[in-house]
Length: 499
Image (cartoon, rainbow, N blue to C red; front, top):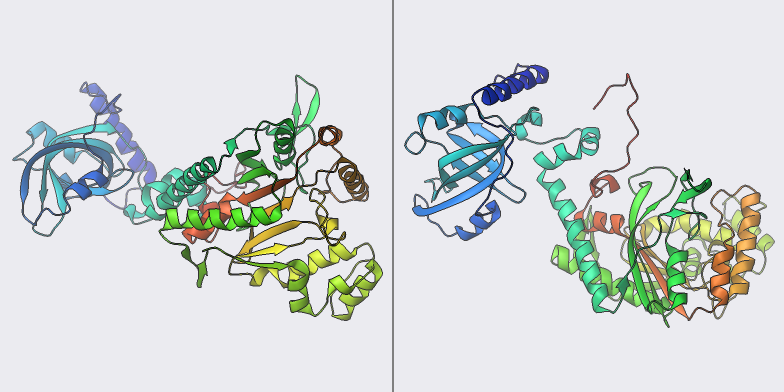
């Protein structure tokens, strides 16, 4: 087809072909087709077939046309996993079939029966004895199948990206495999998988701004889940199992960035009779195992960095890391006022409302996070920023909480869970005061969760791992949108230019 024909005209030409086929009694959109092999199977089965060798093996394959040469004599056929060359020749096809082949276009789905051979140039090929149109493509493939490079189009029309970009298909397959392996490994460790609500009456379980909705039948405001934490803990309290997990979708009404999508996926799990040290062990062994399974090694490359995910990982407290970077030893500071003075003496800003713990957490974020390239568990977060974690057993200003960092990103968050209902209620009350003072992300009061805790919760370790960021790391993806099949995009308003 001439390259100077506009996409609109090309579509009209293809629609006319559909009309002609139907007038001739042929259906251009098949109901069924039975294959004998996938293309990756054939490439594996015949990898030792010598050049110029022709077999007597008849196979049936199907896929999308990605290239056409010599009026259909040579077709590159692609299925979900591989490609193969189709040879359409008058020695093997009837005149009517040859005419039908000449009417095929890039993007069409076809079924092919034929004999396997290898060309003198080494190309595994099927000598077609029958070609069947399975689905007529009315739109043309981008850029003559060499690739889709427009970023907005790749994300808005993911199906088009997947057609032409092998890397995109591979990334999403890695994601699927990682989740599968994650489930299998947790089953081996006696965890059971559960499901908890995505519609909440209280936006709890994390400090974040929720998406709001309204339930018409109940006449009630509701929130899309920002975290499953409080419902999963209720299952531990109820004795459903000592080990539960959920691979869950969460929603946070916040900004977008290369590391943030408003809709994201996490693994969240709880293990009774465990603490945050056990969760560190589980985090590093699980992630090292997943890397080995999906990448073939615990050594991975991200950008310019070689990252070693093999356990054990480094462990340092937040206060130690901040002291290394800034010279401020928060553990020697006794009051909020003293902390503000120490921070300002080093050239950092400090608001009158910022407490000792908030200042420690902020300096960590500003001075330490980005440099944590090799995996590390950052431990002992301040109480002020950890309303759901148990107080540290040796320093009441801290909690038994850690976050795991790789490549400067937080990829896991875990606690020795707070099981004292009186302490939990007091922390919620403080969070409510913060919300009333203007903190939109402060945790709300959850009276039912307090009541659940009052029935008794065993010592428990809890862990959350960000699946999207983990897949980014293991596939060397520069944006979270690359590892989410359909990332959140700004809607195109009427009259705006579409990608």
